[in-house]
Image (cartoon, rainbow, N blue to C red; front, side):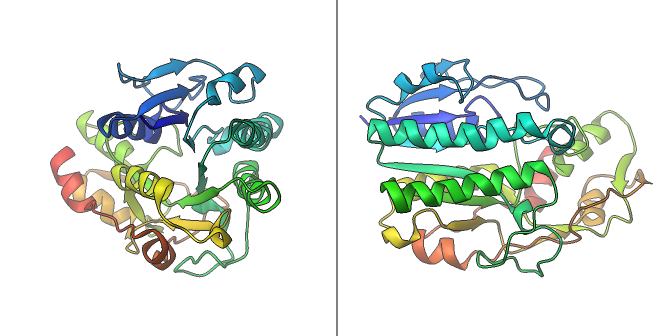
Length: 299
């Protein structure tokens, strides 16, 4: 039986991955310290084994024993908190990632899948965002996640540990966070509509984002874990998006006409759009989710 370890496996994306790995007949171990404040609650699968530990804890090392594949999704992902406490963010996202990689290396793990962020493209890069564009990190969160990418590359090049690096664009779907200013706008708007509140549109609402369905993220991870990939691509970035984007106004109009505008946030890209040629050509991944249909069904 294939054994998989998922860090952050009780959260939004991680819990969907755990469920699918279980469906595929894998033995699944989850490390999650359940520190995220964005979630209403955490999610568990009765057939997986959960350990409420921090990825930085040395005691997690034994959990990598006999693991075939590691899916590293745990992170300090709240931008405001990363600005308030950059040391904690770097501890989790840089030191924590290094420990995940070292423990994987020590245990002889076959491949590590690392979850990063499209925020690494920042403000300076034009769309569509392609993996060869330079980094433009605007806050401790994006700096620390991109640092994790480079550590993955180093572990592949120097130590021979196969790693796959994903930059997710705006992920939506069931179990998405609905609290905090950086929660996915799809979830926030649906929650506001169901509560009879006005949809709060940031700025002029013309910011455009590439929205990718959570189960497509899961599919990318699982496909990448066993795909035949030339080792020269280990540790390099793969975009995970749809190649289509929507404005905030378009999303709002799909949900409710009860809308208000609130002040814009500083340091946010006006537009994101993934170039997905690389992940299609090398892994064979294409997205299945349809944002408009999902909103219509869930609003």
